[in-house]
Image (tube, rainbow, N blue to C red; front, side, top):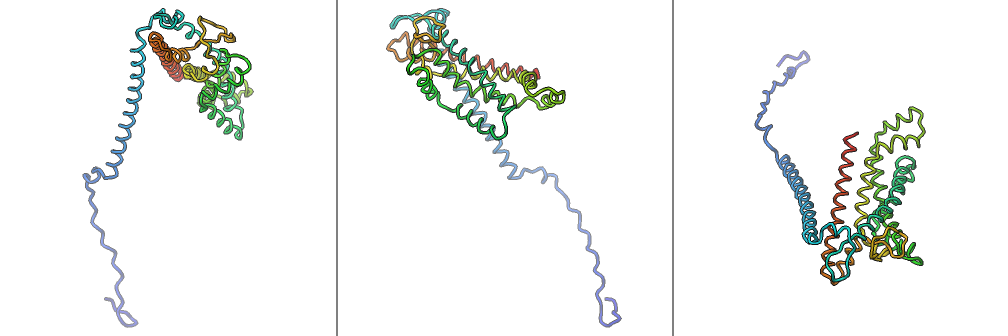
Length: 315
């Protein structure tokens, strides 16, 4: 203790703290797995396994359906099955030529009605609609997309059939209502993928907006729009409920007139009627028609995916 001139002792100045020994880090401790890391890894493995199992289950269900339909309809599949008219009840042989041609006519008419309208709706929503009107229009399209097809058929029945007669045009109009929201929603998503730099470049050159849409946006998104149309057609090809209310007349022969009083045959309606008849030959033809329809839907989906992938690679 040092002497204090005023009396007493004063404590010495506090000595600086002694330096601590350097803490050593054990590399084994740093590399050891904590409980949190183990838990996250277990959750990740569980989610991955669940996703893989779900995908395999979906593929297994698809393969089971295809095998079941193909094995039961293989006995009637032939060239005559696609080119001949159906025979009378209780007779073997025959084919589904009227239903096959009628389905093609109905799908072509429905696509011709719905595709231009769906593309125009998507263009308006993407390029011209204001921020206030977009949510309402999108909600309307989503509600129309989720509308049950039987309600669509009932609406067209009251609009075009009551007071007139059933026809292929009424059935095609009902299918176009089913196709319209699918094309509009998918086309809208494709148009949103078009780079904004293309629109900005056209604006910088002084090109008007509608010319930019027709000359830049639409050609760029043409591959995706075609894919959306093909997938929508594949979806509508298997619809049965609208046809039951608008075109239930089974024409005895091939017909191309959608306004005929005899109506147009279709594969879904033929499957329904043939499976309900007390005829074992007709039941086999129903399985064969189901296989033809299933193959058309599968090929349409595969073709649509191939076109979409090709358009993405070309960009």
